[in-house]
Image (cartoon, rainbow, N blue to C red; front, side):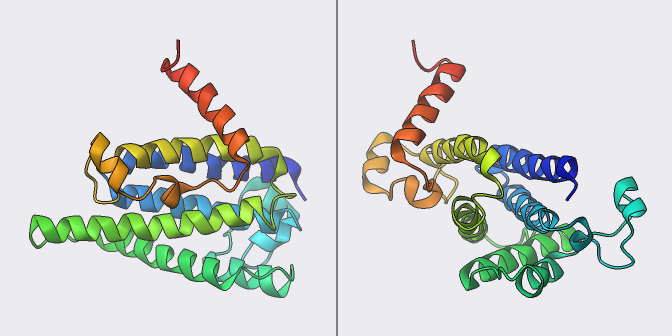
Amino acid sequence: MSRSTFVMMTENALTYLRLAPKDWANHPDQFAIKVYTAIELFLKARLLSEHWSLIITKDATLAKFRSGDFVSVPFEEAAKRLKVIVDEPLPDSSLAAFDELRKYRNKVVHFGLENSGSSVEQIARDIATRTLALDAWRELQGLIHGPWSVIFEEFGDEMVRIEGIMARTAATVGPDGRFRMQKEETEAPAPRDWFAPLVDPAVQAEEDRKLAEEDGDLP
């Protein structure tokens, strides 16, 4: 395995996850695209942790890998190789969630957004988009904190940090894109229902405290 390439690929995936919350409220399509991009990079990084040739579609050579002159495997092939070669198939729920988000991403990238209909219909589409991305994000969390935890162990703290950012984002703006009022927060599902980190609550609380200090929210 090329350790440096594995690290760079994983860090790229984390970068997309860091950027995604900025689009949650006003650009749910871009939120979904960034989440999917991160997921695909994590899948390829998982293959790369086994052997560099697994992320190349065909005619794999070390020279081409080192120079970046190759076509990497698409989602379907990455999932197939995880199952057949690595003997670590994606859970059915993860496979389904990732594939649905992939289809949405491809539709938006190639054909653009659907802007027809009333404002109510647009809100419904935005809710569906956010929900689709959140389902896939939740499945990714399960992999990173579960069967892939050893592979991505060194990135665990950063994942916790990102989960904290995601949680605070959902606490401010709900899936319908509306800013939450204090009264609404007590009646709506807790933000953690959407972005719940799969880590020890004490660890998450400490990470939230550090982030609050950086943001100047604490004295």
